[in-house]
Image (cartoon, each protein chain N blue to C red):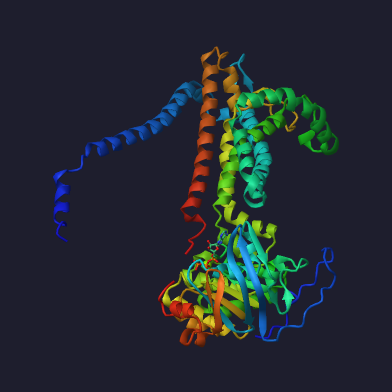
Length: 283
Length: 321
Ligand SMILES: Nc1ncnc2c1ncn2[C@@H]1O[C@H](COP(=O)(O)OP(=O)(O)OP(=O)(O)O)[C@@H](O)[C@H]1O
Ligand SMILES: [Mg+2]
């Protein structure tokens, strides 16, 4: 979907009052097809190391699935990508994840700007209960200061259509967001996340609370969204990872064990631990 | 499973004793019934006591503004007015302060200092009313008289609210004292409400790129607004019935004045002050009727507060899944 209006400049310029080096020298982009370039990234919660020297390149406009047993650091990794982890107490990191060659953790970069570029959808749907369906979708745009009514209306329809929800809600856009079913609420949250046209969409087990039909809808949606967005999805469901993703990363105990094309991971994994996990022998 | 048949056989041989269950249920019912009965009894006694005055003055009692025991002429309006005005002042001051404190305690303060701060707030609730009254008489009132009131009169004196002579003891002083006294309840109820806002709501806002303040506005305050309103109404219930401290600083004069600097009187204060000197039956009866008015208003306000807080707990903000 070619979109002429960019709400946030792709690379937010350093705030003029921010301390730190002026105009950092950017390394050349590591290949136009790489969105996230992450090298030796570690993360600690107080003394507990949750991620251990993760090195991974996440491709642009592809779906990358993160799999692994519970507690292996999938959510932690995902949240580190848009700096949501900074909300947890006692977090410390080492390494510099780069998006399009730009260090997301550079001192002059405002985490709120990072999160505007990298949208996130959570395991449990969380629409704002005091807002209507329309207000929920447009909330991010309003935060960005968009007041232009025609644009808002256009975005509302576009985002709901992309989230495959338009036909179900178009006649009652002013009902509360929480009046929808669980699956609809989750798609509403996806619409809310894509309404601001982020560069990347992070999905943390988006279907774990949904029934098979709603899950199928969300998976179809992920297929659609892939044309415009880089998507990273955490899932516990092997079939889902196999169905929706192009690349799959297997995490275990905070380490990236194996990362390859999804087909390879499921058909012909190089690592015996990966093999054991995808064939259901542990985890 | 050879041992299996033996186990179920043992159970019916010792039938559960039913009387503890039954007697407990009756005791609990009795306890609950006592409270209901007590409320009705109080209401009934007040009404009986007030009967004479109700018969004589009728509805006029509520809006008649003379209180003259010598002429046996009684009207409740100055006291209703004083109670309402001081309560409104108290709410206007205590709600922003209490909600602000609660926000600070749940959303902003560093984790290490949250617990100590909460304790300080709870301590405020433990200070006896009369201590606030003493502090009001000896510290607050002189300070208001010499500083704040003078300043208000100078800069806002064009408003009728801030005109007239300054005595210190006044409706405004009463409102301020009551504000301090209802601050702890408003703060701690608001804090509970804010703490009940799911973290997922905050994260939803953060993930859209909201700043800290935007998260508070979008995800926290709007989610909690009904509960906070309930907290305010609960505070109002307290403010209406507050007696001791306000009696010491309001000036105890049965007047209706537009000026907040003027002395006033409240329902609770006049009852406490004049019961011992009520020599005639009509005088006593009028005091009883004041009590009845106060009881009805307070109960109504509390019921509203409870309903608001309850509907919140019962999923009033919408289903989650
Ligand atoms: N806020 C936190 N504070 C302290 N430790 C945490 C925090 N969040 C996660 N952890 C720890 O970090 C590790 C990784 O957690 P994470 O939530 O990333 O796992 P996960 O792979 O997403 O698991 P699941 O599949 O169950 O969602 C776990 O050991 C967890 O206990
Ligand atoms: Mg997780």
